[in-house]
Length: 261
Image 1 (cartoon, one colour):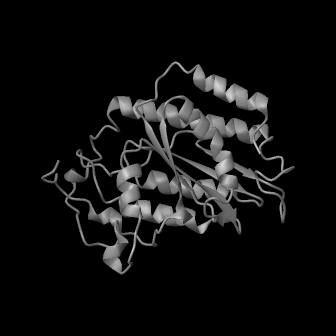
Image 2 (cartoon, helix red, strand yellow):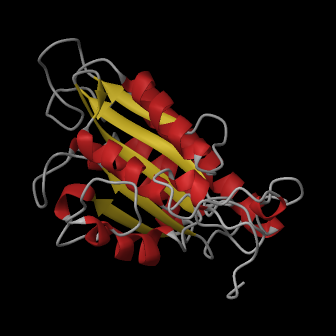
């Protein structure tokens, strides 16, 4: 089910008339649905709004449905070095996350909290937070984040708080109002894209999702044009605290530039 045609038309027209160019930006969106492809995802239905806006302004958007991949739990970059036979995440990180300017985490609510695939991705992203850029900043500096949540029970704001805190903690920039959600009535009931749910027709959710997308785009444009976050005062190279083998990724950052820098 799609949002009403008049709202869809307005969103598309606004994107088409944007005076700023975004065609040098990339975005990766993780969908934490519990449903494997090709089963329809309610979260993906709501994600059609940011995907539409970003695509129409030229952003290259990659959507990753987490459960379609072999991604073990853990906070090391490659979990095959820690007892697992397979791990798709190093390639996902290298090919999609590392070159992205925009990093969004989306997913459903279960028992009032984020679904397990959502938390899994946060933990695996955290594994790379010990990497640094050429200036000695955490590897996620210069990226912009947001959160999208769906569910037929309460918890949208709680999940957004958890996701956005995690993103900013690892170095992602979180602009104002970069979360959006839809919840149905309390108890058993329809999910976002179910017929007669009222989800796609909810102008409040559509408006907030649109605001979220444009705020993400604006800040991604600002950071890209500025060459990232200024590095004065926030470089790990100024602090000799490196413990490369520490289980906490934050403590693994080098205390001086690598030979590749």
